[in-house]
Amino acid sequence: MKAPARRQPAWTFASVVTLLCGLANAYLHWYLVMNEAMWPYIVFELIPGVLGLVCGVYAIYRYDSKVAWVGLLLALSPLITWLSV
Image 1 (cartoon, rainbow, N blue to C red):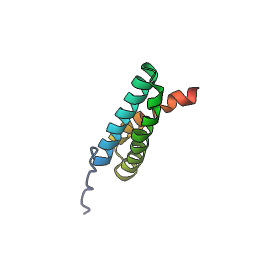
Image 2: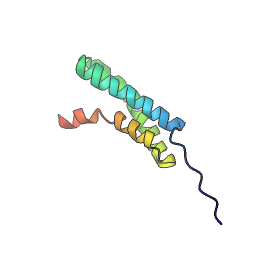
Image 3: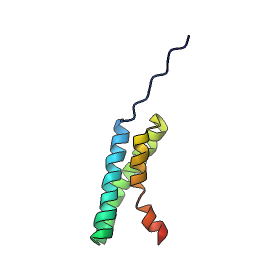
């Protein structure tokens, strides 16, 4: 008889980092850049955006984390603006 497979946790370090970076990136883009028109801050979107992208891909590949999917979508949300221009 086979032992049951161990369940992978959804809240791993990589998925939490992805979620936090996604929230920071969405805030920087949608509030500061788009709403307050602080266009020089667009450079600072790259830091949480790239970090969220890397950690999100890792967490999804390694743990198949649903939390990482949410963070990854938040980190990629500024692409909606740039692809619609």
